[in-house]
Image (cartoon, rainbow, N blue to C red; front, top):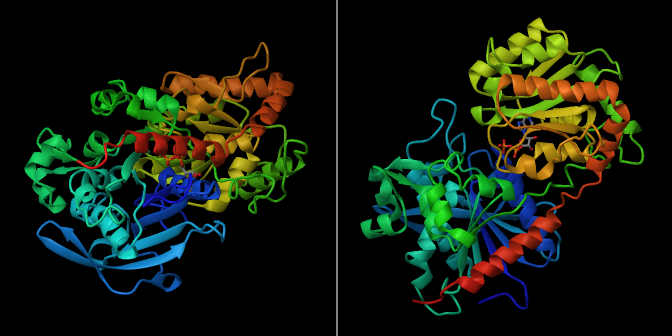
Length: 508
Ligand code: ADP
């Protein structure tokens, strides 16, 4: 039964959520969006696996075990629960963890460094998606909307449409009025596996084709989700448009085009409890657009931390990223051709890098740091340093090949750090290009991804720093005044849920 009034019951089906499990922006989005939706009055429940690293001692165990049908029989799991930190006591976001030692009691979410994609992932995530339905039965709570995120949750819309929706006990207690929404956080990851693993879904071969699992000789989880979810979206309007093209559609552009109006883009917000220069606990002093004194101090602290000359007049370029091809790291750090070397050699700048990922890039970055006195790097993951870089740098570089939304450029804008970004995906939606005639803009954009385009655009920003300083200062303030709150995005998601509910055909 629906929640009273305009209040929707929403179940987030996800493989990642902060503060428990994160490999990328998906984790930030699920938690922040859930909090924003709950704040606006909706009833929110998150379901995710209990991975090995999530301490059971801090969670409450539900009574009894839960049986979950999965290919070849049934698997049993325990269920743990807690509430999402940061929510309101009156309307908390409930979180349920599906606990199965065999599937999730291991290091890594999707794999580990030796095996980046676990071979039993189709079984692990088929089990997980089915367990979302079993959980609702167990707690006697049936959502209006199942909101699935990325390929690991893509079977939830499929299970809803092919089986769960019509497995009626009574209309009050069933999924008969439930609809599904699928959010694509990154089209580059689709969950493609051998067809042999399809039996794990407990679905028939007719559904394999009807639900769109077929992908040449393989089985594609995300494609099935795209085919069956009542509504689809991705995390920025521009990325939604780009993914409809062959160039950026990762072979699913035709599938997305076929969904027409059902597919849209909603820009992510940023978590302002974590990313706000007025309250950031990692900064040496708070600052805002009225008083940038704290930013100057953050710059000095950043320079000291990375053992750079503490010179206010030299611009600091920051970068925080996963080292993967998606982020343009070949063009920036490729040995012998990447532009980072010549930027640091030719320009009067300081460059600070934080990140980890592909081994070749980590090695090259270490090598650059040993050869260039104005290039410093920390290889690894550090929440604290990422805040200090956003706060203390003057420019922030993101030469992404593609970027569904991107969070760092929004953090940068909020912290008065001017983004230098490729004109793609969510970067194009959030950064306005500098106009040196009028001084308009909030950052620096370039179209082509190649080493000289990065070099030239960084050069342009550095030129403006030394020659158009007033415009740079005005741009900082303009960026800091922008609204990237989740409230706006949550309103758009509510509209999307209602559109899905309006469209649902109801019982067959
Ligand atoms: P993606 O999800 O593709 O990695 P986003 O920009 O959407 O890119 O989100 C990346 C998030 O991960 C940001 O919050 C960023 O600050 C954080 N991040 C990435 N690498 C690191 C790192 N080495 N240390 C700290 N935070 C990091």
